[in-house]
Amino acid sequence: MKYLKFYYFSFLYFYKDKPESWITEYRSLFLVLITITSAVSFVLLMVYPNFNGIYPYVRVVILTLFIASFIIMQRVLISTGKYQLIFDEFENHPINTRTNRVTCWVIWLLSFTAPNVLAIIQKGDIS
Image (cartoon, rainbow, N blue to C red; front, side):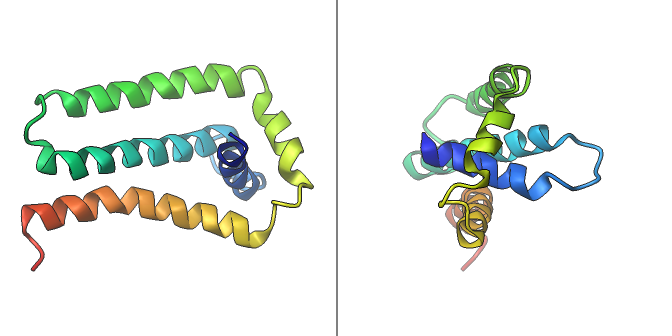
């Protein structure tokens, strides 16, 4: 759980001073949930290539779980202010290094692209 909290913190840390329209904690939560959803999609694609063999509404279920998770985590982390506790916990923690934060971004990038690449390979569009 510590690493998942640090993963969330790494995005909080990156976005803390960005003057964009989304609030920092929402952007960070969105990226963490994209990682989890992409990992679930990757596993499903490994087990059921092209989602064949499972019910056609699996994509809708995954999207519904993503939205439900976002709402639940928003209430647990953001509405109660626990995101600030996570930020304070890791701000001066020894695990908070530039290398570890970059590793979190690499994990996010790989988790985001892996299901797409796997689906393209399984479909046979790449030789």
